[in-house]
Image 1 (tube, helix red, strand yellow):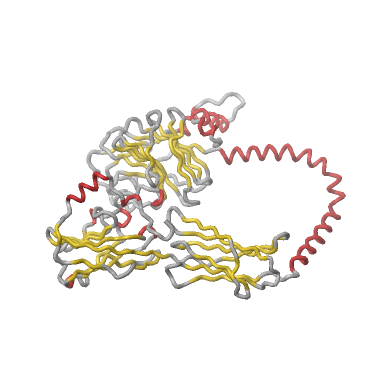
Image 2 (image 1 turned 120 degrees about the vertical axis):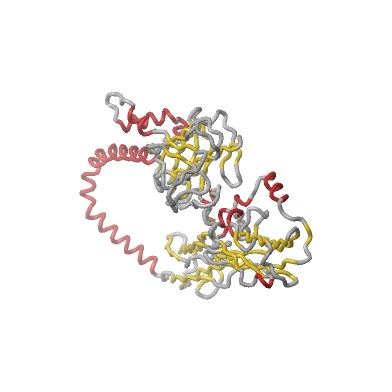
Length: 506
């Protein structure tokens, strides 16, 4: 929400789980009170936020359980109990980013420090102090502010409409305010477009004005954050009144000279050049269009350095199986722990790709793509906002991990999944290879950020999940006489997934 709380989907628990969690917490009324700050706590994107709470009357909180949370007590933003931190009951997106401030615990004051603040940290928090079977808590508000980049103003002359100036900047939160002024200090009407990044929550601004008053010498673009006193201003000087006709006169003279010099030669060879060029260019355009639109079939290989100790990879690294007991593997910063996940070695940032995954009759899995730098430690965040675009089958529920979740009901069982990733269009679609239907499509993927195939196996089911050798299957087919291997691969891909053809992908 603009300027509001950016709620991450991992904060929500299923209703049954919420009831079970709440039953574990004390319900008694305490003879003390917990107080929070008098007003909102302000923190900047990438900075540090301190969420202070204190006891009234003053008393030691050393032997109390101190819990900071968002919308339900568990999992928590941070939990400090029995004199130490408890990382096992913590939201995944706060793992490694929080620290307990204990300097004044003896006098009943404590705080949680959140490092590397993001826009998704914006919103309401609660601090709960529990002493035995009684507790008290207070609510506090964290306001996150992002000061964007220096504005850039580009001025262009338009022959029929005067001069147009455009101002652009990125990295703002919440929505910034844009103001234009002329050289005499007068306000100017503008058209402003704002867009928020799905992965960072930060706002980008593009604002423009059209200037018909030729007496203006300059314009200024000012962008401000409603939560911060700073503002960023860029000024651009406008071309003088006489520059427009001079420019067009110069262009006209040069054009006339070139036309006079080239006219006779051009007229002499025009028909011959057109006859030779048009068929060739048309063929090149058609081939280039086919090459741009054709997805490239790939068969990803699993990366053992990212595989959870709960998974076993085949020798060719095309299949993965869930183990009953975790392996004893060497530590790796890129290894998933504790979730049973693995990434492929391939990384995609541009182009169009297609691969297939055999899930068979397995009852629980997550399949899709993720950002290359997705967090590997703690519970994985299951949302596009945190860099994961995937389908999930779990407890007989088939979901697209969108925000909010989308319940899916395929017409036929999903045993082999076709995945089409279009980096240039910023889309990924999932297809049922059995009946050649589209199951779900995500749009708005990040531009030019590396993506990797992603896979999780949630239950102790010994049946493997396999990346199918689409490329090998195509190459092993015998090409008809006179037809190239590349053409035969395209034909086979069209036969395997004709839905891609009907959607204009092939």
